[in-house]
Image 1 (cartoon, rainbow, N blue to C red):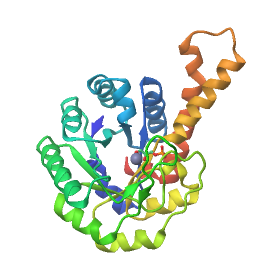
Image 2: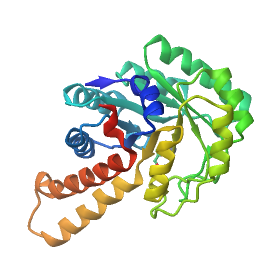
Image 3: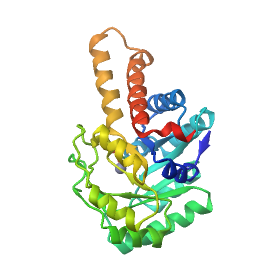
Length: 280
Ligand code: G3H
Ligand code: ZN
């Protein structure tokens, strides 16, 4: 069934667990993630980022994901990840997304807060959950110039109060698109943020987190954990192997079978670490 992020945030906070948001780009990875969640009896978040909605119009991919979520035997949130502007967020809401992120983390504080507040008003008017970001989780590759900046706890408090966001992404040591689990988390910073901010927190760039850190942050105030690269690598590497090992197969449905299974296994592993199945 299709649910909003708000349906689970407080429960995740109380139960000291987190819901994974997997970045998906089409039917195959979305189906594998839902299969994993159904097997684990766990809620899950399907997230589409700017690359996904640039490739496929937002109403097309959103419409498909909403249908898949509605038919799923577990609660599924359909989430716009790193929404860059008000118009994109509005299009996502019109397409049926139950949750959106507005990412103004590259902007000065006041501008980020003002834009986020506008998005919160819009989202809440339609019963859609809204995530904002303060501080900035950078990128480990050359796709953007952003190296990021850690979150200031006082700014986080002011931002949460001013915007009324449902969930707050903070930068505490991870970087987007890491291909190894080698991020170093600033636990003192998390503790300090938690002192000032009661809003459920969101971890971005979670592919880079070692398994033990993933478990640990789920027990803290992180209720949503974004994972993209880990499943993209699992799908892509296994597809490459399939094509290499089966030179006579040209049917994409056959070539996608094992990569989809690999994505499902990766999603099950992360759901296990995050203890998300407590929420169903
Ligand atoms: O918003 C998406 C995530 O932060 C994914 O990051 O690809 O490094 O796991 P990742
Ligand atoms: Zn992110």
